Amino acid sequence: MAWSELWRYRELLLFLAWRDLLVRYKQTAIGVAWSVVRPLATMAIFTFVFSRVAQLPTTGDAPYAVLVYAAMLPWNFFAGALADSSNSLANNASIITKVYFPRLLIPASTVLVNLVDFLISLVVLLLLMLVLGADFSWRMLLLPLFLLPALMGAFGLGLSLGALNVKYRDVRHLIPFVTQFGLYLSPVGFSSTVILEQWRLLYSLNPLVGVIDSFRWAIVGGASPFPWQSVLISVGVVCGLLALGLWVFRRTEQHFADVI
Image (cartoon, helix red, strand yellow):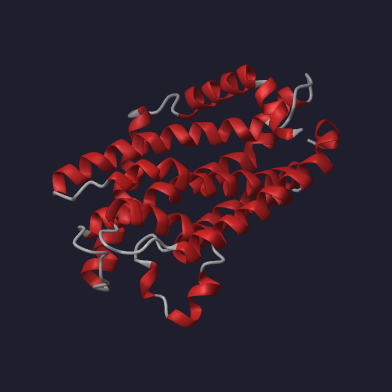
């Protein structure tokens, strides 16, 4: 039922996404360039800390900056989509209380907006690889498939937190803490191979581990084997998050207009 609603109201979904995209960069001095500045700044800091200070190894012959940026792509998408979808219902209280439409469209539209940011960052990655002389691989064509678990996880968790945020506004303050903490729990600034083997399975319960591992395999993997274990665990976890999110959302959406 949920997916059929998204398809039936696809024109409204695209309109909401376009509106959110325009609002995001309205009255900003550099506009969509923020989609470039933020990941590049984070990449520079992580490269310095983990490569120069901690002297952690890179993957294959890839420059450390490419290793970090390859992880920043799915992480920034996940964190942005999670934060925006979690706050989307509360931010759109005015239209929720005035007119009926499938409420699922609101968090879904925010995920689409972050997909646009992802595509912009992907172009920056390609330019960065050209500048640093990194090798390109046919495996990069699989990146849309590898992004799917991040999309499912952000959407599912965003549905649960968004529904709770309607009634408990404390959730709004919890989300930045969750994303900031998750950044350091995920292998963004370092390769997941530095994790001790006996802890690798437990570490892979973080769904972003499998997503980041697959992105790095596609972008800087070289001769490294595909990370089947972390990817399969990631898919299992995000499927659970999506199922839970849809269940929580369906159980509470009929009361949104009354309590928001």
